[in-house]
Image: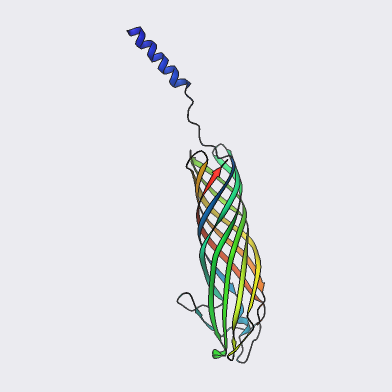
Length: 244
């Protein structure tokens, strides 16, 4: 009996020793996924420069306008608080060296970013409505991070940011409608942020990211003259991806 128990213990011990140990999750590989989130930003422009004098447009002057935010309380001037939902797809490649991870990622988003303002100039003789919106955005970024736990990674990311902007302008001069204008531009700037990822399985990875983007300045034609728009934005998103 003792010999049988000893033999059984040896067999079990040998089986345990020969069982493959669970391997640490490897972040190296290509991946593709989808995400959605919310963006909030600031549009700053110089439209009021055309309304400095008492009798008509005067480029380069100091604005005497008062404006009303159509979508929220409070006075604003040459400024829009932009916000809205956005979502899209992303893809990239990561390479892991020990606990450090390096990679590249690109994304394309549909955006529902839009805001309007009404401007009242020259004691009410000139009325304007300015609307700025964005319907698509994309980025190409490097990212680097580390894995503090087996299936958890934290990283920083930064790179090129590109987005469509559309500016619409309409209004009246002494009650007579001015020609309405709508123009589109492609803004090119930079983006940077932080994020964290968790490997739900060996292939599916969940991720949260927060990024700041500066889309730079672009000039848009209006009936009053060119209006320069400077645009920045913060986005927070959650997504899931499949790692090959």
